[in-house]
Length: 325
Image 1 (cartoon, rainbow, N blue to C red):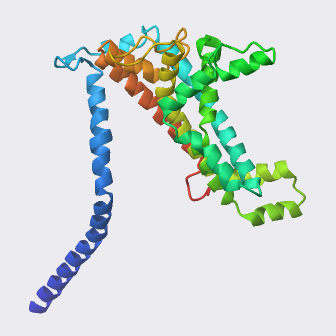
Image 2 (spheres, one colour; image 1 turned 90 degrees about the vertical axis):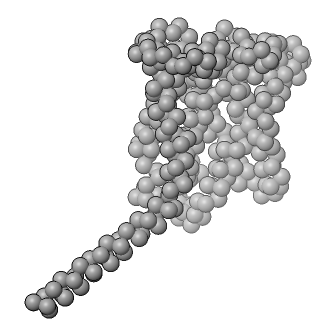
Image 3 (cartoon, rainbow, N blue to C red; image 1 turned 90 degrees about the horizontal axis):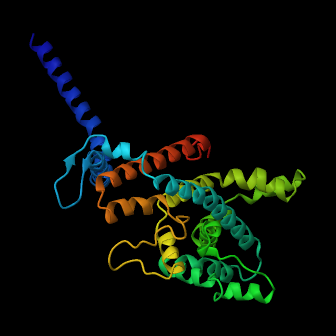
């Protein structure tokens, strides 16, 4: 009897040691990811839950929130400018993201193909990306300014009547795309690194098979840098969904008015709401009209669309999975 009791006690002790041993790796993992989890809860989870709550309230930062049910969500379908702002943002996203990726990739390929002064040209192309967005936008608007801008002056010397760029509703958004191409150096550096990481033996094997330059690019370069292309696409879409500073400054400078001082200026969207982006309208509803409840509705909608597009792109390309890489 005593022997059986001793054996059961040893088994119990072994099970306890096994349980402690299995918990230890989990505690180590939790220790490492704990700060990141805490940051996600504090800076993402809580604001997201608070935004959902405030979207059902009349919220002015001065008075306590007042529950209004679905009133803010119903107003979303009656807002006359939210559709214009959303279309402008979609237009800029559809034009700006591919333009930046193609421009940065071509520039990176050109730099990698250069035999001499590669570092100097790489620095030269990257410099515009270091300029603060406000300063760069002001300089670019003045560069394209009708009648007095250097570009318009050069076009007149050639007998060409240039467009009114930021003062013309038809040319305002294309001018913003040109502005984004001017500061494409940040994306170019990423593509330069990705292209240098393409194995040279793949190009040599393709040459032995008789592949021309386009076939090498199509079947060697693109598949190898596909994760970087997906990264550039996702970050570009997220950046366009938050596009604010350049459009606001360009509208202010082009209209010869100042944004700031007494709050939100009425220049947002100049000319004729052609540069009114979704984040600018969200900001206007919240900080100009003091409708923070409705602004939370717009913010939640923007978050849902950005998250959906990101998930779709990652699932579509499967570039971040081990099998694809």
